[in-house]
Picture 1 (cartoon, one colour):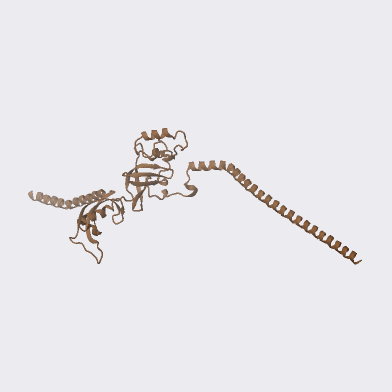
Picture 2 (tube, one colour):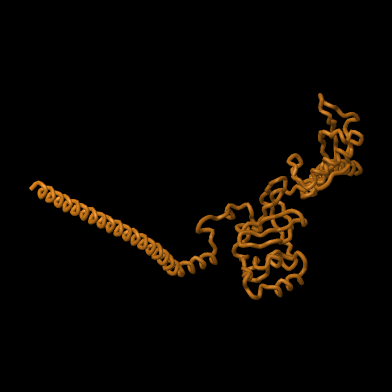
Length: 335
């Protein structure tokens, strides 16, 4: 009786030993996934090394020279770090001695430091505050510092539509309106600050884009680097990388409101044609006046030519009469 019980215990113990490594492997995989998720953030602390050339003025205090050079990197996009440097810390010299090459007085040394970097990536979901609304795009401010632009074709067409604000010459848009805008919270949305800029509103609920606080979640679909500054391109579409959301061109890009405007323009076109005809008539009048002046000039020239011909004819007749009178005198004198 005891023998089978011991065999069963041995089997269970071996089974337990087999299962443990599998559990550990699963735990390790989960930990790796959790670490990967934690690392998938827009802010990173990167330990990096750099070879710097310290000017001779900092020969007595090389650390101050290096810190000043690192300060010049703050708020600039550094390609080697793939992000914008926000701060630096834990500066350390890798060598005790610096080198001077040839006749250059600069001290060449290697340093190591920790850099806090803002490095968003394509596909991230971030939250920014609406800063400006226009028919072509929505501008956001991320962390009160970085610019985000959401183009029109990345705003859901069936859900959101642009509502134009009052014109600048509207009597309601005046000192009183600006005073009311000042009463609102500071930095709500750009349409309150911009006056007649307009806003994006929901088609059914008539709620403005970003809600009452102005914060809006978007997906990063592109990075723009210009003058060592980094700005983002965002999207509000559920599938922002779908080819359906490519920018349209020509007549296909025109919305229904724009088509209505085009119809109105077609209705007004006869007046424009009349104005063009009036402009053409003005041109014709100028042309006719020019022709008339040319004709008058030609007539005057012809008149002058006729007068000159008449004078010449009279002069010829006078000469002939004088010659005849002279011939008669000579005949008389001979006779």
